[in-house]
Amino acid sequence: MGVWKRAFPEKSPTQDASSSSSPSPSTTQDLKADPSPGITTHVESTTRVASSHFQTHATSTSNDVDVDVAANLFRSPTDLQASADIDPATERRLVRKIDRMILPYLAVCYAFFYIDKTTLSYAAIFGIKKDLKLVGAEYNWLSSIFYFGFLAWAVPTNFGLQRFPVGKYLGGNICAWGALLMLQAASNNFASLAALRALSGAAEACSDPAFMLITAMWYTRRQQPLRMGIWYTANGGGIALGGLLGYGIGHIRGALASWRYEFLIVGAACMIWGIVMMVMLPDSPVTAKGLSWEERRCAVERLRGDQTGVENKRFKAYQVKEAVLDPKTYLLFLLGVVGNVPNGGISNFGTLIIQGFGFSTLVTTLMQIPYGVLIALSILACVFLNDYACAKRKMNTRCIFILLWLCPNIAGAFMLAYVGLDHKVARLWGYYLTGPYNAAFVMILSLSTANTAGHTKKVFTNAVLFLGYCTGNIIGPFFYKTDQAPTYRLGIWSMIVSHLIEVVTICCFYVVLSLENRRRDRLYGKVEEKDLDETAFGDLTDRENKNFRYVF
Image (cartoon, rainbow, N blue to C red; front, side, top):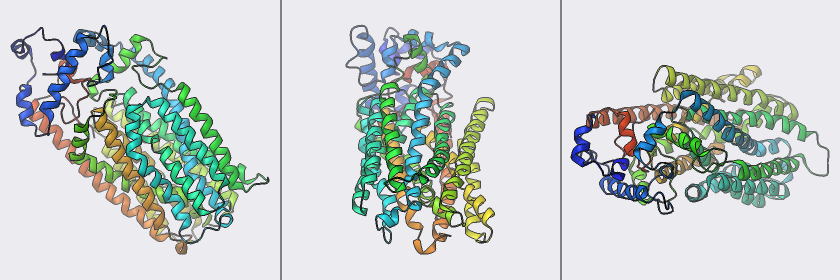
């Protein structure tokens, strides 16, 4: 009793059952077999609204809040099926056009995000500790308090992304974040800088979840890791650019301290880019001004097989409840934590670790450039190889690639833990090998977007993942004890333990989703192409939708 069939009741239920070649049992039997709470009520409610949607489509779509916004582009199952036959060459042209409309804005923005994350690290070698008279663990707190702001605002800002146009909301937050970064240049003590960094964290809290939502809106599940990898590669570009920027700023001989110029320059650039994002970044493929009506239909039809929909502006409490009861929500939270304990330390103490090898302040800034390049190359290699495996070999390889790309990080951390201080080159290479964890985290983000359906559930799950992200980044810096400089032995061991826990968690994720897919195939049979029309844009969750299969 899918959304599309209920929208057009010209066939009787008996005719529908007799004409179907699907091995699936009836929907009523399916719902009895699936113990997910509340499914019957909400599926029936959704199909009733969908029916009303198609009957009134010609006159109004303002009340179509229960189904996905993509349903507004199609007036009938025939309409959807007609759009399903997209010429491959046409689709490739459309995807290239979407890439030009989306990826450059996200990539530049992500480069700024990582430059911002390292501003405090560069400020440390430019004398901020001395200028602000930071003592004890105050520098560690300045690093962590950013993520307290992020943590406090993570859930509200994710629901803000659901309620408001995504492009405008993201751009506005970037502008606010840039302004707060510029204000940090005026700080004269720990308290003022800590307050501004907490507010900056709140402004940045929407960034990664917004990027994930945008990627899920525009790209198929198979295409998402590659596109995520492309914009996340700017992370490495940001590190390299930050090194060059730090080197240049270090040569400024003005009235202000070098670290103050850094906050002013990076903050101003972020504000400008936020305005560009507000004007140029489309909010949704359904409303994108850069696409024709037919291109919009093709853009969302490509997502039909994923069963994840595009967007729904209505908050649905039952989807939050389902997310809370879903085991993979907690696995994603744990992956957010253990994947970012190393990040919290390296992003703020990386320059101090390198400086401990005996390099000067300015050479230390340049040593970050190879690190950034290695991160970018490792991300691209990971996502392209995964895309090849999915497209050519038809394999579920995301968890496998996460495990493979964690190996260099574990090896590099062991090198930093055990290679002697007199072996500077070996220790430097050990530090560089800690970079590929970024590629593993890209794949973790793709696990979240590809395996969560229902828009409210999706934004809530993203929020939970980034609550874990914040927790890891808050915890990470406190493993780096000042009295252990320059080796930071406890900090290095926090990386090793975190990555080993990550390996175990990924294995559990693989097993859980694999067993669930087998259960669904056993109960409902293999998904057939014609069945996808029923549930494509009903804003059903992954647990409600019998046609949904997980990728891992």
